[in-house]
Amino acid sequence: MHNSKKLSLGAYTLTALVILLALLAWGQGQKWQLDDLSNYALFPLLGLIAFSVMWSHYMIAAAKKGLRVEDKVTKRYFESTSFIVLFAILLHPGLLIVQLWRDGYGAPPQSYLENYVASGLKGAVLLGMIGFTIFLAFELHRWFKDRKWWRFVQYASDVGMLLIFIHGLRLGG
Image 1 (tube, rainbow, N blue to C red):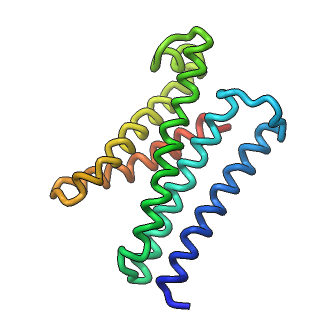
Image 2 (cartoon, rainbow, N blue to C red; image 1 turned 30 degrees about the horizontal axis):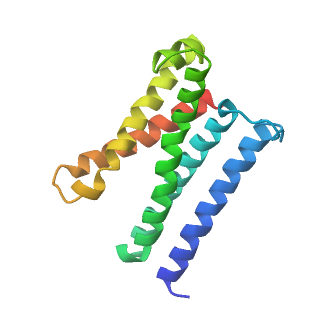
């Protein structure tokens, strides 16, 4: 099998595997009590999925570079899995915001900074908010990826990954 076919198959396999691992970790955290799930229980799963798929993007990009495979080989993979990431990063805070609003806690950021997380974890929430903003800015690549300044948005997305990693470690326990 040629490197490009191996990479394409490996990309989808890795992504499926990391999504499965995210589901297993989340389910274990729920003690597999899945009969009456609320938005409070579901929103962390979407954060795990978003991070896991973005991580797989980094791994596949590194493999593509290392194997010297053309961009067109992974183009469909990145396009299709980017929708998973976008869906998950929008719904991750979205479900929490909606549920806090329904429960009478008001609008963000006050609703989750004052009513959802302990005061010692507010910094982790702020890191998540910054990472979220960076990732939304990265979605503009469809229109601006050929601009000279776009590389700075790409660098910022690397910082965003680090921020989200810290966010998840602090809040995901």
